[in-house]
Image 1 (cartoon, one colour):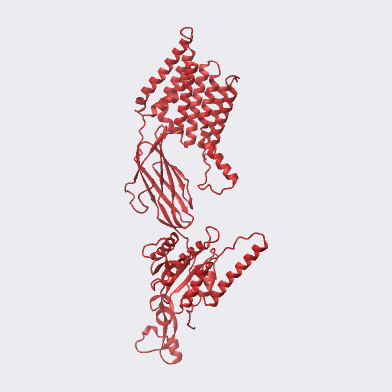
Image 2 (cartoon, rainbow over the protein chains, first blue to last red; image 1 turned 90 degrees about the horizontal axis):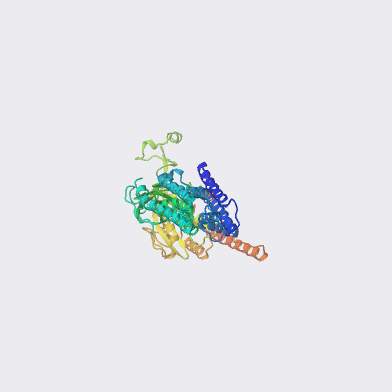
Length: 190
Length: 439
């Protein structure tokens, strides 16, 4: 087990845990916040456990095994099949939306979540961080859009009423869509 | 899917076998999609643009990753280092992929039954090499191979599972260096010293010189003592026919050292030892009243033919140049069981019909030696009746062996751990006297 192997797994776990803490604090008690918190913790913990036990071999023949070993294999099977990270991400975003509008912390959370998913991906595929080099430009554009979104959230409404907020939202989504349309051609030059 | 090419078949530069890939989103892509969609959904519902910004990076990554090239087909080549191996022997398989483009390749080997991997079972790169060792004789599937291709951004994965070629695993021969030699040998050149005089190298005696004898064979000390010219005489060197009779009826004992395992390993060792001594060796495999056979032959290749024949009989088939399985023991041709041959039997002597066959063969005048490979007792529970049954069973076994010895068939026991030379030592020191002849 190399140092890089351990470091990437530890980074994934720490990023997941810090995202949960970031999205939770300060704790609110509305909109099923407790359930979302439990789901987020379970998701991050399950993902961490899955990464930690990824190298445990499963015997080819599972017939006539003693019950404790069969239970252990069943546990491993569940651990490897359940989409822990997806659940954690949804719960964390849910926790974040329960707070009143705070654009910059949300942007930081977005960056942490992206980093969490990338670290998890590197950990489970045993790849070095260099494998992400082709995506750096896209990630930079994404970070710019993240900042733009946060900035749009901080802009005062153009006018009173819900229409202004909707307008800002439409503008942000249009920006993302435009970037998504243009980016494949940018990325193809790599 | 499996490889159409067989190991040792095509050359290294031969084209591989083509396979279609099934591409699907990677777990990473699914996670990014979940984050992007969840954030976008919340942005629309809550009308908060910062969540649209949160959705931007994952959706951008997914959108940009759509442009990656993904080959629909790749060409794979699997080349085992050998097609035949003995138990415990190291075997390697070289894997090579072509047509993957810029995609990263990950190989995962799932070893088959009785295949012990000796290296890591996962590797990255367009070429990979896995080493393993077959643990038990028989025709073994090396295993299955999972090949995963990932595009440059690792957002899509092409999956492929292929069956690796089969490997013929031979029983690891036991150790045997000495041979049991008959006292009467056929008139054929070989390496065993016969009782008749001839052109061998083993000193046999001294006789008086007759015209025509070679001058270099004159024994001068003996000539000086006797006052007349004496010459040395040497024993003729002959070879014998050896038929290995393997009883495959009962397979009792622990897997890996069962009676059948020991019979095959012992027969392989005997075949090697007698062929090394230039004897003609054949094999008869007995199973449930019928036999498969291979006529005696010479040479190193005969070892492999014999083992192939034994394994083919175990599979219920017939190898090249041998009989189909199902011939009766009484109807064996002379080629399979030549008169005057030494018959070395490997059996646990559990099948009564086989024991009767041995008695019948003995009465027909064949010289036999039985290697008893039974090393297991029936399982017994702590009950007096079970213990009694086991004692009766043991007495029956002893009676069978006693009756064979009384008929003049030596029975030696081999535990499968030590060398075969040890139980056979009593019979390898001096020639084995055939039936009906006197020393």
